[in-house]
Image 1 (cartoon, rainbow, N blue to C red):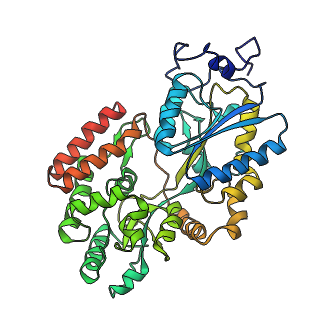
Image 2 (cartoon, rainbow, N blue to C red; image 1 turned 135 degrees about the vertical axis):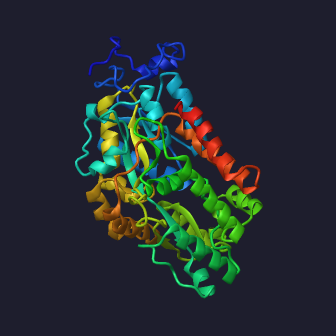
Image 3 (cartoon, rainbow, N blue to C red; image 1 turned 60 degrees about the horizontal axis):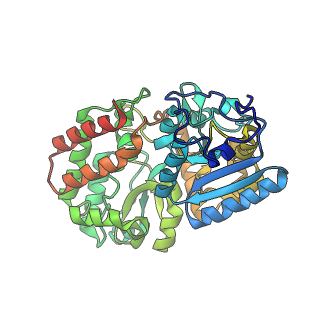
Length: 435
């Protein structure tokens, strides 16, 4: 594509000068490109991501390796924390001045694609030959690819085996267990030991509920952006939570709220006061480090008891390119380097999920830390048994986590019934996603 700016001055320069900004032509409310970016370009890229200090440090090393190998391309890095990242990105996109290359999240990918803020990778020269079709599909909308997975992870039940042994109990057979088995096991753990069987802080996680719904042939969302589950399924979910609380399998409402607010490092599993909790596989290393001991990764209950397996490989995050990038070729080179180069993957390893590039994933297996190897082995064993993953969440899905958390708390404190909690979730979420 040729630039629509005949002066040859980059859009970024014009934006900074105030020529392009909030008063510029509005972003189109449809997926697709309108030739906004430049394929000849100025070689100057803004690169945005979120994460921890270690991620910021190694990503800068990746940038240094990339610019050393690509003379004429300069990169302005902009690391941030998760919440601040999305505030800044929203302002940037609204001003038609999005970063050239950015991290994206599944909750927001459709939102930014529908704003016409992202460029389809079909229009960019990025080698995707070593990425599985199922992984590519997680970043596709209307037949176009707007996000390429940095890597994959999965929900898992993390269990402290030392506490299981202390309670005089055995690990469950996670290849065949049901949610009823889980309820009995965690209830027995709480009764037999000093630690709570399950800390209860993840039942507000919409991704975990999605697994539960998928096991019943349903889904949190449909491909066309509607709600894809029945009231009966969500009622069953909330009733299970109430029953777990009343049986002592999970703590009382106050302790659950406190455990959630304390954050991952201070939650019961990490502090050794809880036997199990549902997390993403790439979180195991950080939790084990705080705990000072090893954890076991188990499959989610109910995988063989329903209509289909509910678990799926989630794209940990995505790489996306702005429609208004000042240099399409340079942006494509950077994404290609991030996905496919030994230098990038050697530094990233499993921090952004196990690499989506299958060849690179296999190459680095001997290099993985023990916790990353634990995740890799779990995902490798799980993958053959998975069904097709869920669709990309609709616009507005970014607010659903807060909706579910708020309603979970009202249920725990008996301020709403199971049925009222379900009704409120459906009403509030439908409003959020425009369903």
